[in-house]
Length: 195
Image (tube, rainbow, N blue to C red; front, side, top):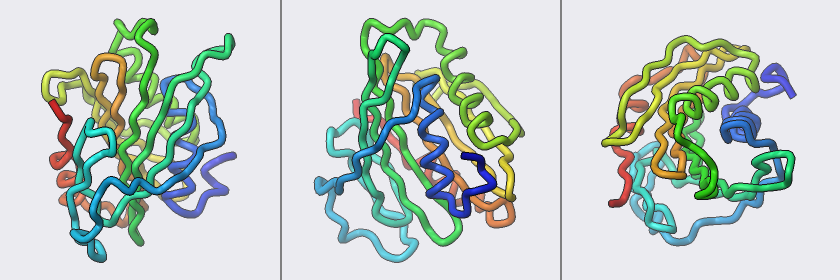
């Protein structure tokens, strides 16, 4: 499937999340509501705090996020890793936190290569091109910030960080003409890992 067949950020995200998994493949996702968080703080496009059911992070979304999870293929030997996504789509953008839980025995020592692989996977899945990448640190964890220009006027902007054997991917998908820097910065800055 190419980005040309996609018309909404949510459909784009479904394709992207299949390849963002640092080389993992696609598998059917099971979608279920995450009932661990009170939705009373949400209003139409009013940012509200959300706590992950497992307590690993808090984030703010413009509307209450949907939750999906799956086990995705890791290699040709049939090994898998677990994946979760928390996504919220407004009329003009999609915000998502993807969490990839890799097995402890997997060698993640070349963190920069893993992070670049995440960005390259998104570029490949969208048929787009890298606009910018910048390595840095989220807290004390190695990260990469990126912007990808996709086709059909869509752009992707985000941050990925490796925390032990878990990769956190914060992603904003939007029509280039509708980009909102303040909303993106709010989404990134409101994200907190639980210590």
